[in-house]
Length: 250
Image (cartoon, rainbow, N blue to C red):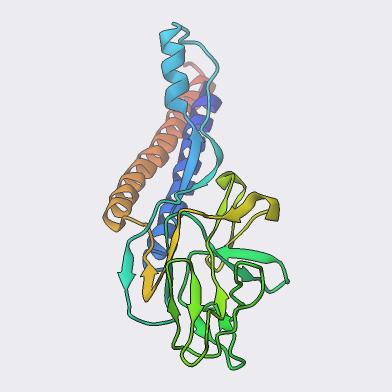
C-alpha cells in the first residue's frame, strides 16, 4: 500500500513537472514570431479512477499518469502590421519553406526575413527562403511587394522575380519541432496550402495566451506542492508505523 501510494504521488508530481516545463516554454516564447504553443497529452488517472468507480472496482490496480506525447497548437496567431517590406506572414494554415543547415528542408511560421549580401532572401538565422519550386529566392532588393498569389515583385524589373508559397502538413502529427522555430517533416507529407494567403508587411505573433498560461502555471505549482507534501506525509506515516511495530512491547 505504501509503495503504491508513494508511486502514485510521485508519478503525479513528475507529470505536473513536465507540464510546468511546457508552460514555461510557452511563456518564454510568447514574443517569438510565429511560435506555436505546445500541449502535453496525458493518459488520465482521473478518467481511469472514474471508470473503476463506475464499474464498482475500488480495488482495481493503481494507475499512473503516462505522458502520451506533446501536441502543438497550430491555431492562427494575431497578424501584426509592421509595414516592413521583408516581413511576411501566413494567414491560414501552412509554413514558409527554408533550406536547413544540413541541406534538408525545414518549415517555419517566422516571416521576419532579411536580404543577404548576395541578394538572397534569408530567414532571421541566415537560412535561404525557398520559392514554390524549392529554389532560393533572390529578389536582389529589399523593396519588394507581394500580390495575393505570393508573387514577389521588385522595382525596375518586369514580372515577378519569384513566388513564395505556404506548405501545409497533410498529417500535422508528423510535424516535429526542431528548435530555432523550425519544423521538419517528410516531403511526402507536405503540400502547398491552397486556401492560405501570404501577407507582406505583417508578422504573425505567437498564439500563446500569456494570461491563461500564467494562471495555469500558478495552478500547477500549487498542485505540485500538494503532491510533494502528500509524499512526505505518506513517508512519515509509514516510517512511524514501522518504528512502532519494531519497538519491543508494542
